Length: 234
Image (cartoon, rainbow, N blue to C red; front, side):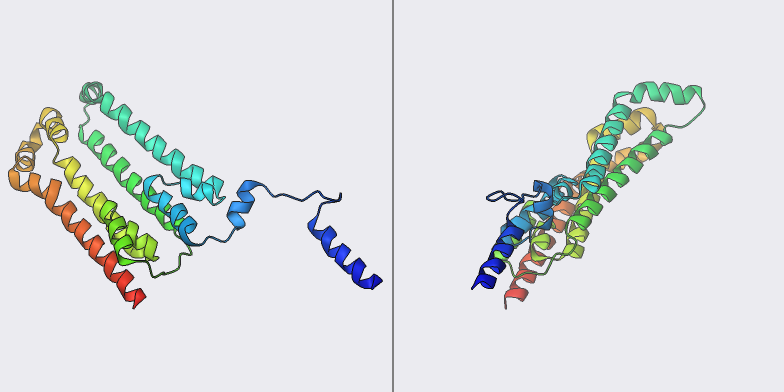
């Protein structure tokens, strides 16, 4: 009996702190990082990467990686805003130096491609280790209707999620290139591309960039998310 009591007390002391009644509590970040992600919480954490890359990593305790994604996007956004605000002065400076405005265009395109890469990379790392699950088809379809690729994340198909997200980034790039501010910018500072500017303003190109391409990608994402969920539930 005495041995049993001492054994139980020893087990209790391992749970309690050095003083009786005092428990050892871990930091919140450690508890979140080590807690098993299941169900709605797992979906919520991984879905954060769609809307703000880096937040999902921070919630999961990966602070350096999360801050890298957040700071990188903030830096790219600041550079883009600065370039657009100083576009006229940059044109004058480049003309004095004998350089082309294509440098500015190339810089903006490079910034856009880097933002796409950071976003997709953030979603990829946030969904690392995700398991394929049998979600309700309506839930997966509705999620991909809101953001193409979201339903695939809920289903645990991160490769397909990145395909549809990349498609929407491509559609957004076409929409930006055919938008009125960009075509006016090219017409003002790059008159050599006037034929391209006229082509971008045609109704066919405008309709394709604004509606057809996004609707096609969104429809395919909704169908794929629902079909994948139905397959797993059968």
